[in-house]
Image: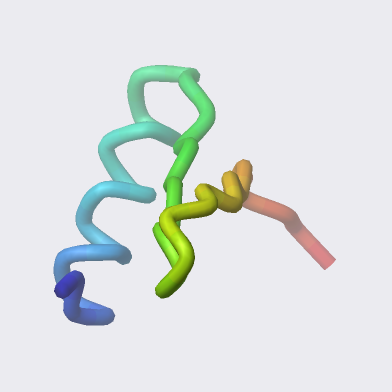
Length: 42
């Protein structure tokens, strides 16, 4: 499990190193869904 605090920390590190954060979530059937997270400015 990933807390919001841990998620935000990982996202900050990715942003500060000019990388993108890729998170994979495994469902009950073993399928993986990937999400790419980037900073956005309004």
